[in-house]
Length: 188
Picture: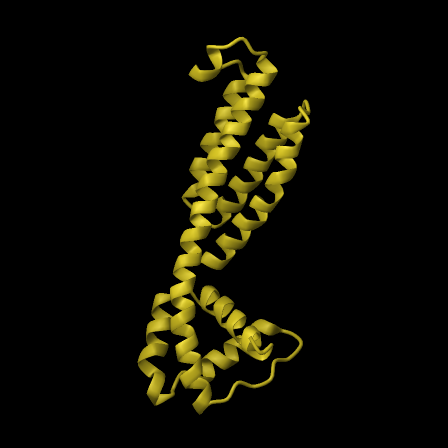
């Protein structure tokens, strides 16, 4: 489910500044903190069976090898301490992971933008035939499922309903539908 992947990646990226602050303060445990951050990200991605898991594991291995004494070519040319070399390697690993995560979020957002447009058109037509009921306070997801299923047999939108059911994961569809209806209810 893309919505869950996006939220996990975004949440991890939002914790990155604290790690960078640790690096800037030259804290002794920066590389260890980075390794833990990568391992937590790796575990989250593995639960989703996301192929980015291996890239994150590879970057974590890069840090571990630096801790074991391996020095990357660019670092072995200068005279720097082992601790500094490990921290630089951790910083480079974070940079690589950040680029990939940011790119992946952008890809998901691009896909969501297309789906939002199609879903907005669908909701506009479907809600003219079967009005949207007011939302309950909880559970929000049940309300979204009921709305979606209520639009299943509308003749004017049957083809679009089938397309959206096929093109989108159920969770992503409900996530975007909830976002769209929230904006509509708030007058946006």
